[in-house]
Length: 95
Image 1 (cartoon, rainbow, N blue to C red):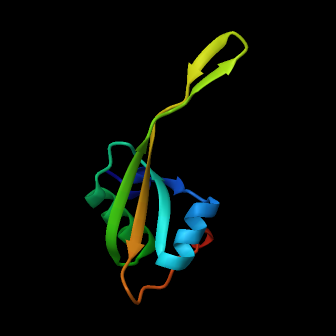
Image 2: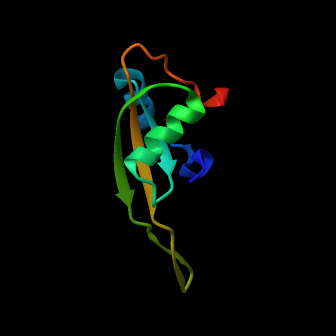
């Protein structure tokens, strides 16, 4: 899988920014079929940093209504990527 297919985008929330500042951990939305090894290799290739560990979380899509019509948002996956000691934190706008 192409590294740019694995990493779908940065998840920029208040929680992810706090984790980023305190624990040197970046947060991404990733492909639902991507493994931890795929995510690690993609981050190392795109951002040119060393990764210490990857944690993932799967989220179910919500049911949504528009009047009498119902729909379903897609399921998605989030990855927390911790950088090794001594690595500089990457700004998302640098890529």
